[in-house]
Image (cartoon, rainbow, N blue to C red):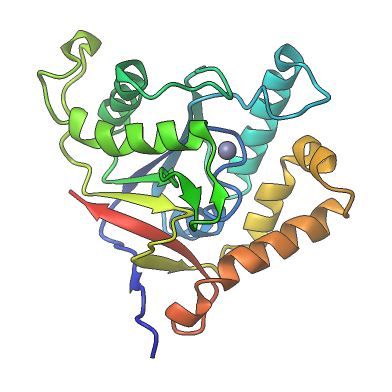
Length: 240
Ligand SMILES: [Zn+2]
């Protein structure tokens, strides 16, 4: 029998999900988020950019507010009302202390026990090359979980250290360790992805809802064999 994924920890109250772009959380994670907010947990989204370089036919200054609106609607579909943006520049987000500082500041303000991010490695499953923004943000999140707890790192923020991050869970990884049943949140996850309508309409000629459903069925189906036959959102969990 294939080695099974552990269920994600449930003994926590606050999560902070930090990703590079609007839509990064909707290509899979949102089904897990819907289940968490159902259970009364607080989830905050932090986006490093506004995804303003994401649509070829729409210039960045016009695109940024549009994608921000779609991201807020998308978050609301899975019970998330707190959505923040850091305004790093889409497409050229730099890994470095400026990014770590911004993420550590959010951790100190929101005091999450669980932090979620997206694939920080060079490739998607050793096949497709990952984008520099995802790599930069994913790595900065893993690092900032430590920075946030050290009062001598970024003291200029004037915020109390937060050493309470217990796990950083990376989605979209080819080395998953844990998973969440995607079934209860699946329909809301479809609507959450569908909320990025402008982006999706440019991306595909397919009916947008059919596209979202097919994508998420595939994404949550890939971990099924390792999670008791259930569709699942898989994470690579780094305990702290
Ligand atoms: Zn992205």
